[in-house]
Length: 134
Image 1 (cartoon, rainbow, N blue to C red):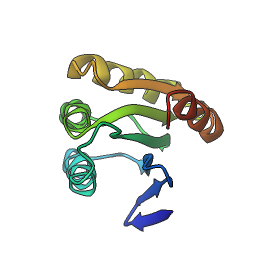
Image 2 (image 1 turned 30 degrees about the vertical axis):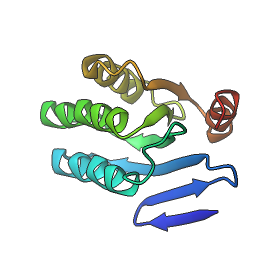
Image 3 (image 1 turned 90 degrees about the vertical axis):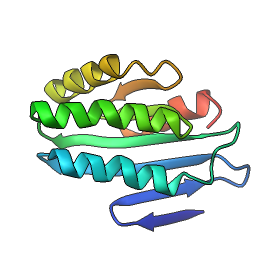
Image 4 (image 1 turned 45 degrees about the horizontal axis):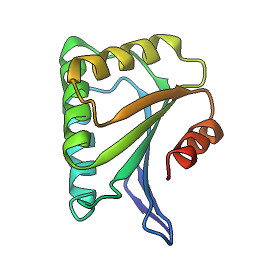
């Protein structure tokens, strides 16, 4: 089952697996990043179970962010881990600079219970989720 909420899409499998999708474009400002994780936290508040959820972020059309934006992306990782996100797949296309910056945000967030990977295509990201039980 799929449900769309603003720029988000949520897919829920018959067995309870959940994938949250979002797509970014242009420059993400600090307040927009705050809104992003607050919205995901709100959407996932009933999912605090053993299954958790996974997040697929389409970042191929994003530009690098400011230092304030970077701080909020670190908070994004912390908030996602706190609300049960198990895996994050970044669909980067060939956006090397943004993927390097995203990797730094993950390292700064100190969130060992959430694993991140970067993929050129959605298919590869979904395959990784499937290999990990989603």
